[in-house]
Image (cartoon, rainbow, N blue to C red; front, side, top):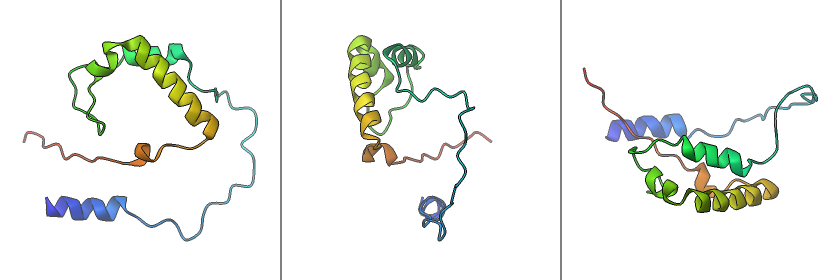
Length: 106
């Protein structure tokens, strides 16, 4: 356990680069990328594709709980995503990581 902790401290907790990248040329308007916030239908579709009987996330919430009232969850997330989209700030909790070592057979 100590070796894994040491390994990930070295790999994940790296300092910021001394010189930040300088991107001076615009990417152009030719990219076919939808940059609008997610729609309710997109969120609903994502929930319908969410697999059940999987491990908990950092929030200790299962997919089954999130899908129990899929319309409520979709509406709630739609409002949340739009607040985040308009504020252009990612919640601090979304920046935390959890790394789990999964032993494999053999």
